[in-house]
Length: 241
Image (tube, rainbow, N blue to C red; front, side, top):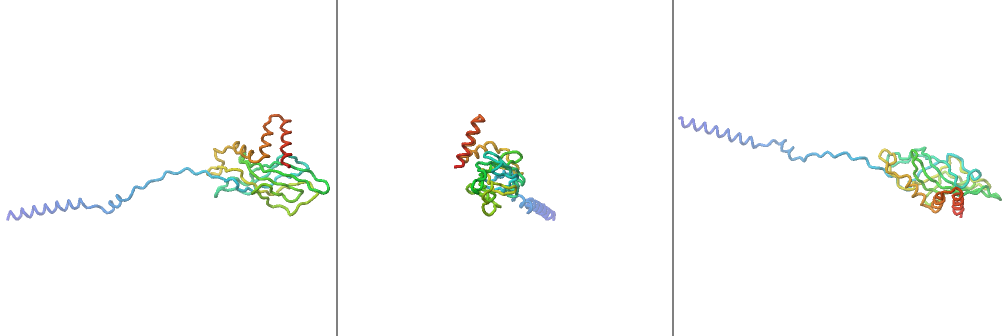
């Protein structure tokens, strides 16, 4: 009898031990799933990328002061303004109202025998917070009629129908012209010019882009007022041919 009780006791202890080992070997499903999932990697925030306004991007300008062949001569500059916002994606990089300049490169007064005065000019630059950004675009004004684009790929808009002869060449306030950005221009994500933008280098490149501009740059570098004026006169004369 004592032997049977001891045997039952040992059996019960053995079963409990086996049960404990089996319980220890059981794996919690949720723990296993958690251990099998890869650790999440939190990406570091990337700095915003610069925006690029590509060369050739059109910019609509409007003349802000009357220009005519009776009161203006070769070398005179006149003012324009950007008529509509220029954007890269959804970011405005050149806001409406940004000032711009153009330069008269050739002109004649009111001609004899009913001929119209003529005037040619080149768009020079816009000024973003005082920083110069070169443009391209060449035009001819004849009488009070059409403003005709003379540069490849540049157009005039809002022109009148037909020339009016026997008049001075007159460019009225509000005349709309289409310029183009001369070179790629970098902006920050906030739409401001990139700190790396080099205005002097950009202007130098633009001034070497046409024979007239190269001649003008050379003349202005002579360092003598009389020599400079004589050289500029030659530049304008060659521009006329």
